Image (cartoon, rainbow, N blue to C red; front, top):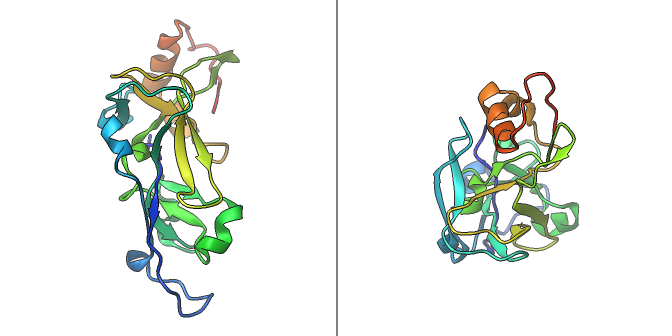
Length: 197
């Protein structure tokens, strides 16, 4: 599983010569996140088998509080980096502000929240209550924030959904991942296993 996506605050702009001109990827404008949020979380090995790093609370984060902002490099439709797992689609309501860029690549500039891992909202049609964070899209900078869905205690791993367009199957169909999540629910999923984002 790719390490999760996560979000931002100060936006650096670049003057474009014309509306159709797109800077090379390495020179594209950056959206910087508010690093104050990163003091509330830590990146370390995820509890989910094979997920790499995850994000954990180091202080109590209350329901509806902002966990963090997703930073990144703005990229255009034809940018080759669109194939990585850290790409977020900027909401259409912000396109006039970000033109000609429609995506945010948070792989290298994503702040701590870019390491939030996915957890399913349902397994075999049963609510899991695993997700304790949600992505909110904004029409202005910072474009993306993660918000707590419930109180998150220190030491708790933060899990979310990546939305309906992310490809989950490659990771979620791994037996160890299936067994990890089903084990948390005290459920045997070897005969039947479905999940929802």
